[in-house]
Amino acid sequence: MAALVFAALGLAWYAVTAGGLIRPLFLPSPGQVLARLDTLRQSGQLTADISISVYRITVGFLISTLFALPIGVLIGCYRFWEAAIEPLVDFVRYMPVVAFVPLTILWTGTGDGQKFLIIFIGTFFQQVLLVMDNVRSVPRDFINLGRTLEMPDWRILYRIVIPSAMPAIWDSMRISLGWAWTWLVVAELVAATSGLGYRITTAQRFFQTDLIFGYLLILGILGLATDQAMKFAGRRLFRYLEVQR
Amino acid sequence: MGENEFVALVGTSGCGKSTLLSIAAGLETYDEGSITVDGDPVTGPGLDRGVVFQTYTLLPWLTAIGNVEFALRAAGRRGRDIREIAQEQLALVGLDGFADAYPAELSGGMKQRVAIARALSYRPKILLMDEPFGALDALTRHHMQELLTAVWERHRLTVLFVTHDVEEAVYLSDRVAVMTNRPGRVKSLIDITLPRPRHYGLVATPEFQALQAEVLHEIRSESIAIASLGSALS
Image (cartoon, rainbow over all chains, first blue to last red; front, side, top):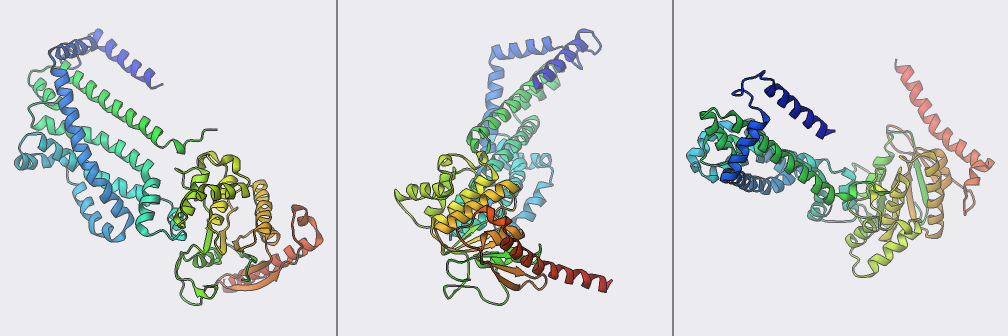
């Protein structure tokens, strides 16, 4: 079904451009875009751009997740930590990430560190709230079960609460990875000397609309691929949730 | 409650029977009165009381046998006999063929059977059951009542069983405690003198019907009192 939608859209794109309805500057034809991507691939630029961006998002996202998981679990489980941290998280969450770009450049320069920082600011606070919510929706009676078994709190936490929240947490990570892509490209658009976002900015300077379109497609494909990969991995990891009769 | 007695706690919804059970389980605190097990006051949850919850509480990432083993391990059992005991417990509730099934693969009745096996596995003195069959369809519920009776008649232990189903209460128990609404307290205790072992045919006998009517009357007089109070106020 999804494949059909993609095919229809592609066909419409082809029809509109081949019919000369729109000037190529605004909407280049699929052939033009593919040809541009192919030349970039042959020069090695495409692979270089993709790998640097993938590297940045991997590191940035991992750092953010590594901090968000324990803090989110803590806030979700203990009223004290919720009262202490949640308002702060909510406060920062509403600050536009883009506004942090000049600050982060000032703090860390324009290197990879700044990209990590932007991804971190953009995803960490959202992740904390998602994880908090996931932990909180663990059924009350699961915790009561642990209590009737005289399990100490920390054991209930890591033997019942965390495994129980894991499938939902995995899903939250999948969703927040999508946002991380956006922040990566934002960071690269503003100040970078490499990466997919940077290439789009330089293309803009030379009116290379075909390149912009090509790179947007690549971003879409990368996002879709990671999303599908995480969905698939989630189904494998949490196979016990599916009824197989 | 006497030792090895099966007591059913009935009452209209909202009268606090589940709360009373939670207090007995040590999951909720109470303002006044006292709850003791063998003379020791209840100060929190403990392994001397096994609980079967109203909701399905099988841990979904563990198999049926894994869930029973989880409780045994929490209770401090170690070594090879864990698997053996778990297998025995599953056999007791007739699920020996489903040891490796995950909860998602089990029906509601099967899940509650595993929950019963799990609560019995570490040999608590008292089994506390909070409307454990409330979410099941009528046929499965009858089946579960027969199974519980059979298990209990073979391995006696003290049971407190909360329900709002009068037939269920009479069929299962030695004594029925009727609880009143606001303030929630036990209004009357009715001895169920029906012979054991019990089978489902018993439900149709005049003795059963008479006891059921008596319990119903106790509950109804309560709700009628509330209804007339309501109309007097308006």
